[in-house]
Image (cartoon, rainbow, N blue to C red; front, side, top):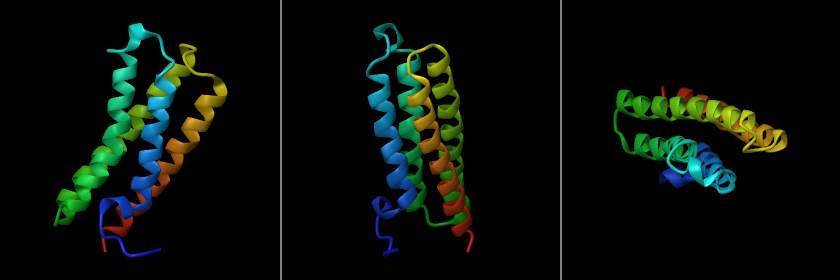
Length: 120
């Protein structure tokens, strides 16, 4: 693992960025009536994850960093529910739900590890 110079070097940021791209791709096929509903909510939650990791990275003290990483974690949990809702509404297939959820779970595990590593 190389030196981390910018937020783009953080592996969990990279993975969460991929999750955001995935959510944009998934929501592209939703009903247009959901543009200001579920599409907007899912995209906002998905973008919040890498955004807060990036913002937390710039903070100098641990308390400030953890605040942003915790927001990222909360947005991730929100997105997991929204993925379930999209599946139950039949906007996405079971297969797309499972693969997206797996990616979200991977981001969650990585974010947990990243947060623990910041305490030292």
